[in-house]
Figure 1 (cartoon, helix red, strand yellow):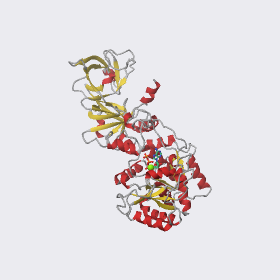
Figure 2: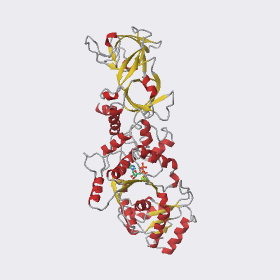
Figure 3: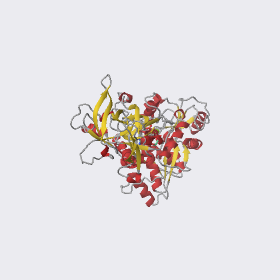
Figure 4: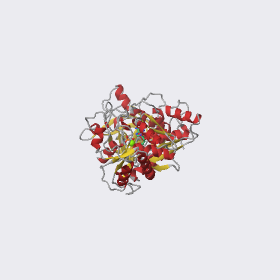
Length: 561
Ligand code: ATP
Ligand code: MG
């Protein structure tokens, strides 16, 4: 397994608690769990929880369970179960033999519910959902007792059996914990713990038509598995009172402790499975793994490395206060990783033909390019050079200002690793568009420097027109134009989708070495950013690349201006 500890960083508050519990002997070994509901694909927020739970287990020689919290049959599926496993593995974590499903505990959970009834601590209630809300009270007013609250144990047992046997219709009643309708914790005002749902479950089929509620199921699943530290996000802080009530009331042999940390929020995106599902279903994106989505599968397809996501999670840390992380922090994490590891190549995104008029027509020579100028160990490669080349259209400008250090009539530029060339003439078509540049090269400047020491400021990338391979390249921008697309409750978050979030370039020309690129490769296209093949669109003979990230944080520049 990959070690993600950062020894130079102080322990976060949860790791501190774990360390104290080990030191004091409260626990001799640590058991955590990552408990996704299989109702969607995992996103970058889940990655934070995965890194935390699996990270803590790994650092303390403990174990981390993968538990599917599958108590909502209508919304869950095997497809999601499989995608979750793929994503956790890809991030570099392993649950070994500890894969569990809450649905495995349905029998035990049912028996615990019966036990609560026998203790006089649960009752079957026929209030409708609306009535329940009405009876619940508010933060300032206590609730009212349900008229069904004082049924006898026998009656409750019989009714709960009817619920279980499918004799009662969906929505007619629930099993509620009998706690305290005046509790300052609204969650303790007789919460529902079982409901009737007549839908097939992806694992238990039609065995059950009652399903446990989260708060009843989660603490007992943790208890059954012997979890020591049950780590969840802050919105569950109030639920802790119920978590503890269930385990205390049932006097379970072990009582895991729940700790809450601040969830990950990133700007310019939405981070809720429900909203991501909407984008997928309504086809605003190309599936859960669309490279613009901050799902783990989207980030993988975009070209993010597992290491960059782990490093991002370590950077944002684990705290108790809600905060917003700038999207740029995530982009920087992958940029930093790829800057070290990605070989450099040349690719022209929007090509303009160049004819070197004084270069022999039949001649082809090879120039040598470094695969990583800062890391000579990554070696070199040969680049074919000939009379016809492609350069980036934006590297030529008619009537260019003085500070334009690229091509314009009469100006000299360096072709990376090759020669100095001077633009003699721009050839235009009938519409007046520049279609080709006629240039001359200086044969004495092979490698890119002039023997007479003359200074040439600009260096541009190029590809031999005879040898280059063609490709499609997708450039991405943030999916939303608003910093907090779901902050305005009056507006739909989809109103803030960025119409320019995907730009497809169909006529790109890449250096020939890329013919052997594989799905596992990531490259820096010099001056253009980091790229990888798209796992869905690329086929033999038809390369489609995604830009993972630009070389610099262009958004930071925009906000500085
Ligand atoms: P969503 O809010 O996106 O629908 P969820 O919380 O319903 O997600 P679960 O499958 O229940 O999704 O989440 C599994 C685990 O991941 C939970 O322990 C949850 O606290 C954690 N988690 C979910 N979102 C985040 C987040 N943004 N930051 C950190 N942890 C998260
Ligand atoms: Mg949830």
